[in-house]
Amino acid sequence: MTEAWDAAVEAQIRGAVQRGEFDNLPGMGKPIPGKGTPYDESWWIKSFLEREALPSDLLLPTPLQLRRRIEQVPDEVRDLPTEQSVRDFVGQLNAQIVAWLRNPEGPRVVVRPVNADEVVRGWRAERDRREAHTPATEPATVAAPARRPRRGWWLRWRRRG
Image: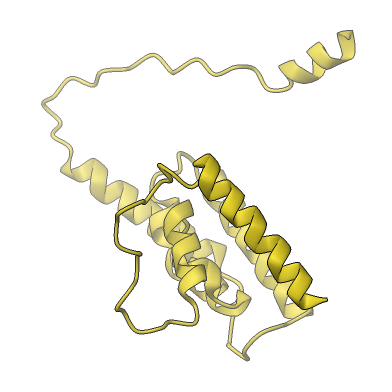
């Protein structure tokens, strides 16, 4: 049975070669990528992350991802406009942390909710520091806010149809 199968496959390949279906394939005449490098069993994960331009943090288990996000909170909230938006950001992060604490999976890593008051204090101090470094002699130019489409317009459009 396998001999008949092999013969049929070989016949199909010979026919495709005669028809020229293997001519001008991409990469023809070029070296095979990765040839001569040691085998890496996670090569496909690395190539996927590189091809899709994804951060390698996605490979980390959930508690380590949460720890990394906690470390990045000051950078994340630096440009938020209001204290309430900072508190909302911390609240969303804390909701994810509490959800993980209720059903922990992955390595046992200590992850605690973020203190919103401390983050707001740091946010205010950073904002005050930036305002102190801006020269007071420059006239403040007020740029017109960028016009954003109203939220929910697509819902009204969908209801019409």
